[in-house]
Amino acid sequence: MLVDGLPVPQALVELAQQGRWLPPSDPDRYVRVFGDRAMQPVFLPLARIRLNASWIDQIDYDEEVRQLYIGKPDQDAPPGDIDPHMSLLLGDLGPDQPFSLEFRRSLDSPSVIYLGSRRGWVEVAPSFDALVDALGL
Image (cartoon, rainbow, N blue to C red; front, top):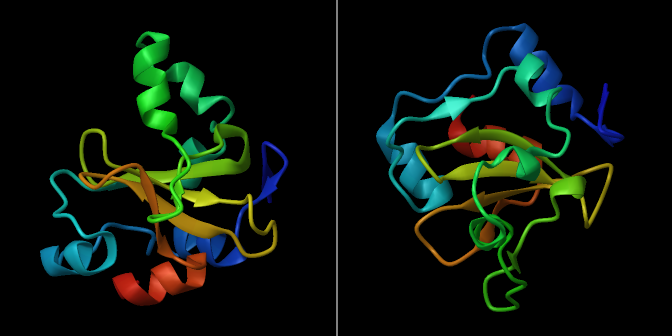
């Protein structure tokens, strides 16, 4: 399955079809994986992931706020930023806490990045499979 020309990992498709792509009930898992507590976790259904096109343009704010969502490259806590055209949003841990597949490094095995209370976007899993394992899905 492709969304905006980006391949959705088969494991995500299977988890969603099996009804297992759901936020974990253990609050400590979020802290271990993302480094933050989940306030209102939402794992997007496939139908919503398919509507990914130009998600940054759907943010109903001015350009300055949009740039806060995009971030800036950070070598100390990579990647620091996100390319909206090379990413697929997967969900949110709460308001302004999105996490996403990140395809800039690899189309075959995207990493998972997160924008939370820390500075900018940070990698929380080197692959979708690693995220699934860490969350116990």
